[in-house]
Structures are given as C-alpha cells and as structure tokens.
Image 1: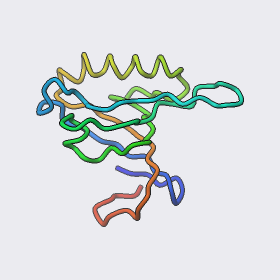
Image 2 (image 1 turned 90 degrees about the horizontal axis):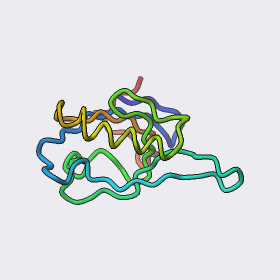
Image 3 (image 1 turned 60 degrees about the vertical axis):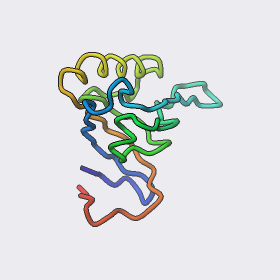
Image 4 (image 1 turned 90 degrees about the vertical axis):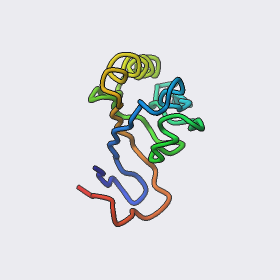
Length: 120
C-alpha cells in the first residue's frame, strides 16, 4: 500500500522475498543520517542496492528511501545504531523463517505514481 504525504513523499509497504537471493540477503547498503546542528539521528536510509540481492531482484526499493519499519517494528525515534540492530535481527531470525522481510519506507518520489499504485 502507499500513503501520500506530499507531492514528493509517500509511505510504501513491501514484502520482499529473501529465498532467491542466497547469501546476498536483502542486498542493501545503509547509511544513518544525523542533523548537522544537533547531531540528532535522523533515520536510516538506503545508500545503495547490491546487484543480485533480494532488493535488486524485487526492484521497488530506491536509493535514499528511509526505512521506517521492519517486520512490523518501528525504527522511528530510535538511534541509528538501534535501528540497524533491529534490521539485522529481523534478517537473521524472522526473515529466514518467513522467507520474506516486510519493510515500510518513506520514499521520495521522482515520478508520478503508476496506475497500479494504491493511494490510501
């Protein structure tokens, strides 16, 4: 599902299959952003998408998407370190058992939504 925030941002929820990615896992490189003024953690963002990983094969995650939740567990308001640990734990435990990982991301859209998008 998608929820528009403004003309440039929207929340997206994805179930990404992990079974076909082998040892590549989700296949993303992440970065934690901090405020220049306060040094406050501003969230975890997709830095790059690794060829052959689950995210690459799925094709819906984009560079600079912000990870908001993983497998129903919110990352908002957590330190960057705690958010990264939550993602690692989800990949090693739940992701392997379920064969998928559920992500909610805040996406910065660069194009108009397709006809297949569902706006709530």
